[in-house]
Image 1 (cartoon, rainbow, N blue to C red):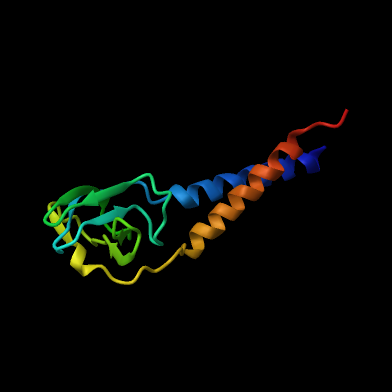
Image 2 (tube, helix red, strand yellow; image 1 turned 90 degrees about the horizontal axis):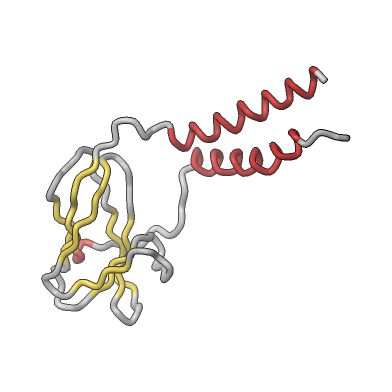
Length: 145
């Protein structure tokens, strides 16, 4: 019985550690507006993803000269894919600002090749640990009758 309690405590501690690993940097977030500006002569579509996704909840069509405001936080990378309205790849904009730069402009002409899907190792570790904990914890607490 004591061994089961120790196991439960260890699993709960691991689950809490995984959760905190993913949320540990939430304190002190500085959010500021950045404008993505279509400085090209063609209409483009801006999507909230790094790999030309088609299922992004954000898909903004920008006419030449048009712009859209995106809220960013200092220090983190966020890629936005740029395509033509027909889906041809233009590139990606990495809206990374080490310090807050309210009102910064991100010209579409600065789009670079998209990095594809990537995730920091600590994020992958945290997600895998949390998934394992979520799958295991219910079985630990089911009492045998």
